[in-house]
Length: 529
Image (tube, rainbow, N blue to C red):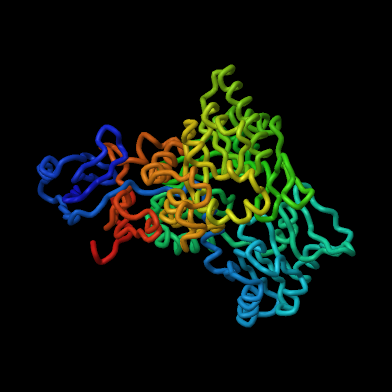
């Protein structure tokens, strides 16, 4: 048994919101409460640890992450630069370190942040004439490639846009080297894919980074290779992170044949929902909108209509698989909500389970759609750091419609469950950066000012922490064993040396755990512990 005492424990259990000590047996909390009561449980062999008044919180869960992309991105060129020239300099540096003919891979560029705007294939040709280059945008919904990569993919002036994608072209119709949505796959499938062991090794190396941030769980949205790598780590006892694993739509038929439903697995690695894409993203202006982007006659790209969402959901629902639907634009969200409302009616009429359906991102809604998530009991899986990262783009392309973009407080006011995440590697997976963004609606440098961007959408510290704990646990169907600190729950927790409820909101992003525990085991701790 392990007893942690002399602590300020914020349990997130409304029946016992605070405590000063807790006892852990193997991977579970067996008692929690007052110092004297818990210390009285000590017996020979018990380890008693004095936390010197430090704060204990439930472990935090990132409810939307791309674990394989994140882990591999740590090995790629960092293209998140203030200028296009700096991005090109970094690529050129990697070229000097890479044998000719091998792929140069990078991630993180955002043309909206660059005074020069989009790059071109010729820009990359000048620095990498003997290497194919593939650089994914920050949004993961676009790519920048050179002429060698275009040639390997067979993309030329006569290549048609693929379904659900777009090849950017110059005035003469020649590809520029910028690819959107499904067009990215035309090049990506030419790149040698990492083996399972490569991905497992990369994830293994990334785990301590996540633990140091206070993450004890994630909801992952990468695909088959990532799932196999996670299974390998789980089998070897090296995962030490609770993972809810989504399934891609192209695996639905196999899942139905096998009868695999949401929740299959264990508390370390279990099946979540089927991931669908209803539209693109704000950065490349491919999110599906009812009205065009400002200054453009462009409404984005809609990939799914309501009837398709319903039909896919009904097929998945026959074996108990929930849906997790990517929807950014207001039209995409409206279509998805209509499909999910039909699915709820079908569940009711057929006596099927009321599954944990969710919409990923929910970035902009029409006012008349705000209450529909709560009415249909659909979780809003959202990323608060997107609000502050995207605010200038949102104002530029959505204008006054941005009042109901990233509208977390309004959604909460309607009774919507929120689950917070990061969409890493699109953004940092640091949950305290997300908490800071949700509470202040400001960037780390303080912009746009003391009140933040659309300050009426700020949430409280309590609400933000709950979205990383209780909300994520509910979305995973694990609210009876995760998300709060109670007797019988898994011993997943973090230790802080500052109280987030008592510190200035503008400093929340500076919080760092001094220790992280998963399943009763300290997986990371500083010398202070």
